Image (cartoon, rainbow, N blue to C red; front, side):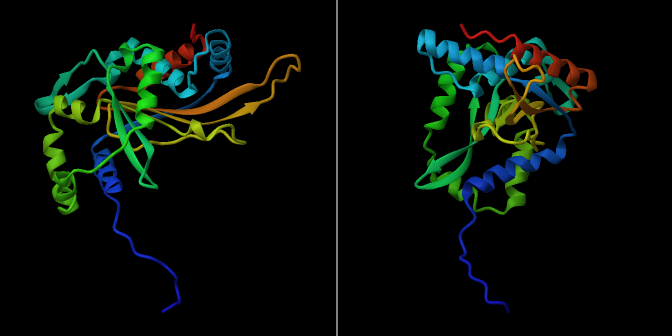
Length: 256
């Protein structure tokens, strides 16, 4: 046996929970659309708001707002199918947002359900994101006990419970949203293919500066993004309409 140096740790509870949730992806036939969009206009709006009204608004909040507005124009995208092939059309989109959280000196993966995103203002979404990043997660005794059960039993429980769209929406939302844009400007544009089980989801990748071929014009700030739809709920034309609407919202974004 080779002389390997290693330590053995208990598998973190947060990763078990995320893995259990992600396991539901195999029951969803997702289709993905990868695209690029220029966020130069949004960044300019943020600078103006900071200068004129001393508002600190993040790019992430602006992009979430644009996504929410696009969803509000196409509510059929976040409908859900329940038992007996019943179709549930909701007025409000609840976003499942996974993120990295500092906990007792360690980094854990957790999630926040941001309710009614398509009914909120940009300032309300910014406040939600700030509270999300300040969260402190403490696992209860019941959660720790439940996570000691074998994985197949936990997933069986989830699968039977999540058949009800109302319970599923309340527990994990009906829309997925995540991002790596906080990594800042990079030399490449990246995309992600999220393995969610929601009706619709968006992943915002990294961005990079792209030089304009006309010297008198500023550089473009291009991000890579992925829009995912449950093929049982939506089809290709809906994917195209949502991408088009999101790009329109980004290019015509007004903060003040």
